[in-house]
Length: 618
Ligand SMILES: Nc1nc2c(ncn2[C@@H]2O[C@H](COP(=O)(O)OP(=O)(O)O)[C@@H](O)[C@H]2O)c(=O)[nH]1
Ligand SMILES: [Mg+2]
Image (cartoon, rainbow, N blue to C red):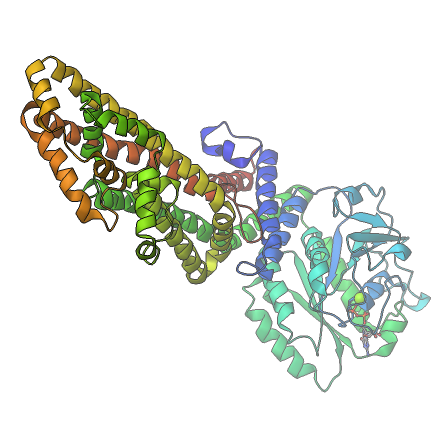
């Protein structure tokens, strides 16, 4: 169920497990959307912090099993060496090659009972034997069980009698090398799973920004932390430790309170992990203290929930910034479409309805009326013209072709239907061209939502032929509907005239000599041709004929009514009914790299789930 469909505020509170699931689904969706980004929203930090939050949310509920110690740090600092020191044996492979460890590798120290806990760890990855880990499959992890740290030599037996409780030590991949992008997820998962963090730094690496970046991301999760500076020689120790202090204090509290320890620059360390030198003992002692001081399970769960909620809240606005930009882009697109609709109507009014030469409802109605009057000679012209509707226009165009083509593109079928369809089609073409230009400009100007604009532009390009076809059909339908309306109106006037035989007779006999051929041309092309001057007298003759007496009054009233009805039809049926939905539809289910497709109600639902889950009832 999509979170949108269940606004939490309107429903009975679901148990917090449902809230956690809803929140987790939302974060995964957001993370995956970031994962698909190519440019504008391609942000490693957002992808990583979301990954961390998804894992933290999952492991907040994780209760059973032994405690986990995660050894984290940049490449070549000696993480694998530290893991071996903590295990007291060579379990993790140490290598002088940077980026050698690419999988999370667990070492179980002591008898942890069942290994049921492994089911909850890295749920969509798979566990393989330590020797089967392969660089070709990064979504894998391994577990090596040991029976505990080897006992100390006899001389030390009395100084440290109690062995540490069973626990898991994790060797993790580096997160700072270029290739690490692919396996940073393993690091973040294990960091979120862990109860104790051992951060291994070295003098070459303490200045490495990625370390502090990672520690900054981890800070809200507030696990027990130990900073271990490796490969230190006495001469550089004061300098390195002072620089470390500076960095750590800048980290918003948590790591400033972390225990610190150092390991010397001693090649023996990597070679004999069972050593019991004082620095190694101190490191082990700190880890054991941290394990001994872990909160009880119930407290641990509450603390993890609180910490995870803090992490999520800290990044929430930042994560959703491109989503907000996308919402703004959608609103801007709606506004562009609305502007286009308003402008379309304005152009239609300006270029047709209110245009002194082009508005032809009167002429069209007059022709219909003349036909009904059956003025000798006219009727046969009419029916011929009806049969070959384009004939007169074609004749004229042939005559003036060169003049014509230098000014306008060849007219199409809709132009030949009449002035109104011609204006509608031209306005539509202008609008499509303008929308393309606006979209291209927005794609350049609105960096944050550039993917949305580019995708809209692509869609407009791809769908334009179909949109044009559909809208042209709608224009033709409008023409047909309106022609029928004009005919019906003319018939009504004729019926009224029939009530007054004297007027009818006067009309029939009065001006029977109108040049109908020109008349039809004028009606069909509405003064848009260069031969306007020739047709005007014919139109004038017709006008004065019909304007006389009763028919004239009726015709005037009719024309006013037709104009209103035409405007309504174009606005409601064409613009609102066809044009606007076709354009708005372009943004529906927009999907692809850089498009989040997350709605405001979905965000609200996820926020409600967070609040609910954080409160922890259920
Ligand atoms: N000199 C010295 N070398 C070390 C120390 N710890 C690790 N090394 C070496 O540093 C290299 C990287 O160690 P490794 O544990 O694989 O680092 P990782 O990449 O962080 O896992 C190896 O060649 C180790 O032998 C140390 O304390 N002193
Ligand atoms: Mg390693």
